[in-house]
Length: 217
Image 1 (tube, rainbow, N blue to C red):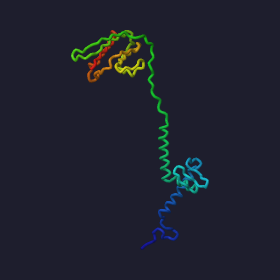
Image 2: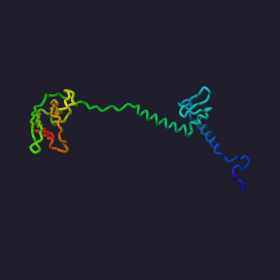
Image 3: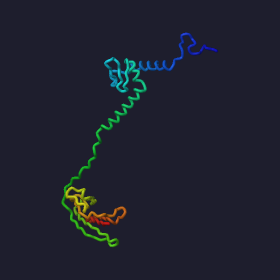
Image 4: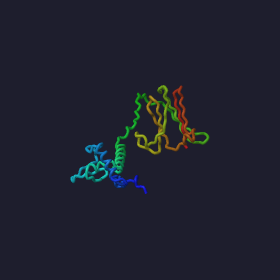
C-alpha cells in the first residue's frame, strides 16, 4: 500500500484535523476578524462584571475575555438574537407611533335666509290602501345648481327634543335655506330598493318646488 500522498504520511505534516480542532480554528478566525472590525465601546450588549468577566446581555452568556466575547458575537446564537431584537423593536415602534390624524369634515358655512314654505297632505294609495304623506317644499331662492337633499333620522339621533320612540324625522336641506325637519310616525316603511314606489320624490327646477311622497307599510 502506498502511503506517500496520505495525510500525515510526511514527517512534520500533521494529521487530519478533527471536528473539535476545526471548530477551535474557526472561532479563532472569527475572533481575529471581530477584533479588527468591532468597537466594543459601542456595543450596547456587553457588560463587564466585577469579576473581570464579560457578559452578553442579549444572550445571557459569560465570557472570560474580549476575544471570547467577540467570537460569540459572530456566532449563530448571537446573530439570531440580534435579528429577533430588531424585529421586536420595529414592531414596538409601529405600535408606539401616533395614529394618523382623523380626517375631519369641515362644516359648510353660509348665510341662511330662513325657512322655506311647505305643505303637507295625508294620502292613501288607491290600490293597496296604504297611508302616506306628501310634502311640497317651495324653494324660490335656492342656490343655482343646488338640489334639495332629504334623509330620515331617528328620534334618538337628534339633540333638540326629548327622544320619543313613537316618531321619527324627515330632514330636508337646501342651501341657502335653513335645514327643516318633519316629525312623522315611526312606522315601518317599505325598502326603497325593494319597493321604489314607497318613497317618491321630484324636483321641479323651473318652479323651484320639491315634492316627496312616502308610504307606510
